Image 1 (tube, helix red, strand yellow):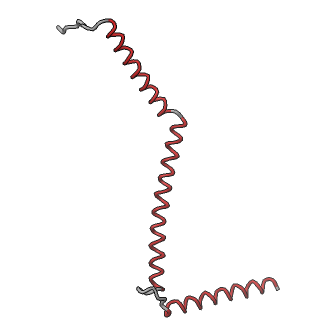
Image 2 (cartoon, rainbow, N blue to C red):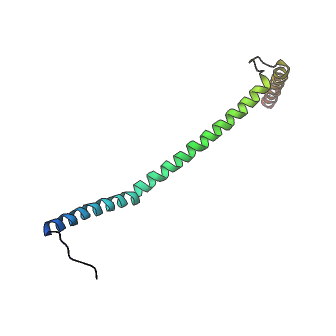
Image 3 (cartoon, rainbow, N blue to C red):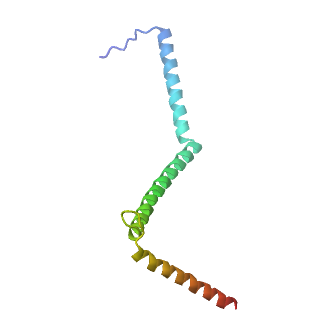
Length: 109
């Protein structure tokens, strides 16, 4: 049989009860804050913002990679333009702009 005698004084028991109530009140306050709608919404917003930041960061890296690859097609290692590739693309661009301009003029006139 276990010894159930308590050697604490009534004042010590009351102090223990008071401490346990304070701890319980703090725990309940924490739980209340965690399940409060504003806290839940704030946490959800933070997660969405973090996901967006992550996605934007990945997109930036991919775009930067593509731009670097395209740039490498038109600029050599020294940074000088590769005229054998730049000139045909420039002529093509001028031709497309010219055709679009002619088409717009014909529609107006």
